[in-house]
Image (cartoon, rainbow, N blue to C red; front, top):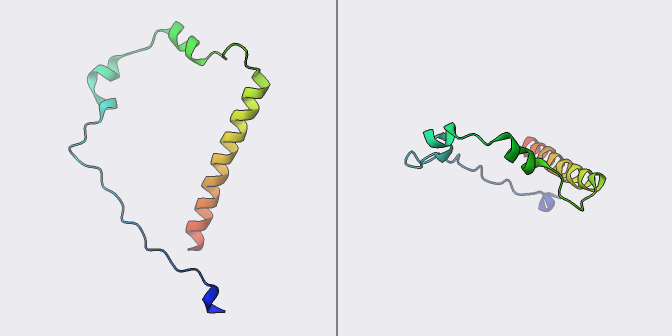
Length: 80
């Protein structure tokens, strides 16, 4: 019966970020930049020819899949 047990995986060592890596999102030029309101509206508009209900269904399914994978990963970590 013990032949069917799963082998315990080695815990991964936490990775430490390299102090030499520049964080581009914290640079002053990036922090001061602001998108004009009209550009933001164009970015979030629904593309022509795409049905809102289809877009919503597609993205809801994707969000649900990501959420379920996160829950499954959490359960696996708790049981191992």
